[in-house]
Length: 152
Length: 152
DNA sequence: TCTAATTGATCAGCATACTGATTATCGGTA
DNA sequence: TACCGATAATCAGTATGCTGATCAATTAGA
Image (cartoon, rainbow over all chains, first blue to last red; front, side, top):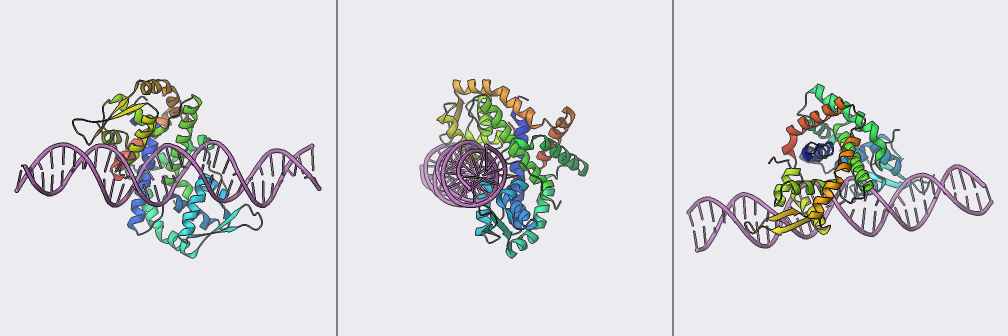
């Protein structure tokens, strides 16, 4: 364990770092300007219109304070709208714009390509096993971060 | 694949997010103020005294521009020294201070505990398999980020 | 019903991480 | 030797992510 290069934390960090680079490469090559978080948020809002920011944060496992900035930028790009929820004036209701839905539809192939590229070193069986083990490991530690995944 | 929650990129990001939270929890509980990058950098410099920043960045797979800030903070804490290399005045020679070596020695059990905690949902065989698959996947994509791992 | 605890959003401050640019220095070559 | 491409470090600017705090609005309980 003494070797940093083989510590789980270091391997996971490197994989995340490379996964983000691959995402950017694929998405930019297709002419889009969208980060991984922005994509996740946009996709989630498109799937659950009129969601509030706290619920969105829980569904994609991001911190609420991070989501505020992400939504700011998506609104600035015209991909999302944010309105005060009149039923609960603390909350902000999110809605994907037509432009947002259009971007989402057109960027999808690049996002899929990025997912495949990340695991290109593994056979199909190995990739499945990797994802299974990752999900299993995550299930045991989900509550240990400030931004746990919350199911629907 | 359509479901974000099961995309490789999303699973990897969540794992990294939680791994960092676990690292902080363990290290802070033991009374230390050290981030994962700071620990990796300090450990690497202790192992390879008089290393320069670019080589350090390659050995722990961090971007050079990130390492500048990380070293700034380690120097500010008195754990590292940074001197101009007189043989190559472009380079900065790094050296772990006595305080740095002491922190490294005393924080080690917490770092080990964090590594175990990250994988606590997996059996020993599963953890080994997870690490094997991660290393294999990483080997195929190492060069796709701006900060690839460079071996000794 | 009045108040206390909770919740949604935001902010300040800090530490990664990235891109692209700049500066200083080095090494090889005309 | 004078120059030119490469390299080490840094900087500016942007986007995550985190902690801890604040503010407004809602809900639950005495």
